[in-house]
Every structure is written in structure tokens, then in C-alpha cells.
Image (cartoon, rainbow, N blue to C red; front, side, top):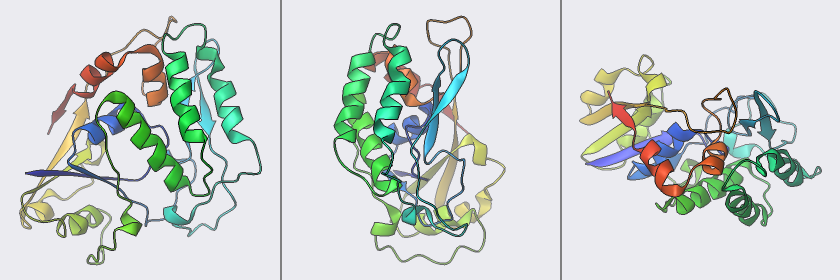
Length: 237
């Protein structure tokens, strides 16, 4: 069975996204749908200085409402890389893996990017390598895969999976449980499951635990072995 995951290219996403990456045979970055602002493609959350959280964000050039994800460009007029790294300084005194994570980000940031998709692809691949499971992530718009037109939102993944061979298992985050019509997949001989993460608190060196932050936060406070245990802590429904 070939496990397929199809997700929009998120920026330094939370643990569940990385778990899907680890446990897939093919993970496709889906970039041919409309970009929705204030989502997870250009930003994510880290700890704030004392309590709470804040966003780290990649600035984008102006775009039309109908712009597809693949056409969204980074605004390189500002020193956004320096800003993100400066926002992460709050981890320096409390996080045991601060320098390792900063080195990882610096390796990604050494290159120049105009496309948010290309930046996120590079960062995701580097995170996977750091965690011990290297992945090459295909970008859907570059795959030259001719698929049927999706008449409903839950058919994009279906129509892609139909082109990827036999014995396909499609896995989606649990949030799509009520969104997907499982019968459509079954009649096309595609199994579909939904991944439900079991997120356990870890020591963030403060009183109140902030859940669901960027994988950057997880890597700051946990070693590779501990993170892989977290990534394996899920059920499929």
C-alpha cells in the first residue's frame, strides 16, 4: 500500500503536519488552489517573551484575491529573515537546542527565495532531514499530472490519487473527517484515513503550556528522539 498525503505548503507547521510527512510514502505540496490570507502558508506561531504566543511571518508581495498559491511571491524588500531570527532570541536562555535550530534556519535562509512555495519546501525538507527521515517533496504544479476537474473541494485529492497507481491509501488530518465524502474514495478503490494526533505537553520552561505551536518550538525544547516519539503518537480513524 502506498500512503499519500496532499497538503498545502505550510511555513514551519505544527507537529501534526510533520507527522504526516514522516508517515507518508509520498507527500505532495498542493499549490494550484486560491491562496487564502492569514492562513499557515506564510506564518506560524512561537512563544512570546513571557506568556502567550506571537507570529513569525514571511512578508508577501501584493496579490489579487484570485491568486493561486504557486504564484504568491515573497516581498524581499524587508529583512524578514533577520526579523524572524531576532524573534527567536527569546529561546536562547531557556531552550537547550536553540543553536541547532538557528543553524538549521540559517542554512535555509542562506538562499534567496522569491516563491513562498519554494521557501516552505526547502524548510520542510531541511526539518525532515534534521529529524532523521529525509524527504523530497514534489510540488503539484511541477508534476505535469493531468487530473480530472474537481467539482467539489474534496475531489482534488481524489483525482490526484487516481493518477498515482494502485493500492493507494490517502491520509488527511482529522479536521477533514466531516469534509470528505469517503464513499467517493471507496468506489475508486482508494482507502482514506484521518490522522488524529495525540499532543502531549512538553517542558517550555514556563507555567502555562502553549499547544499547537510551530515545529520550531518543538525542536527548541526536545531532542530528535523525543520528537520522533511525539510524531508517532497518533491514531488513524
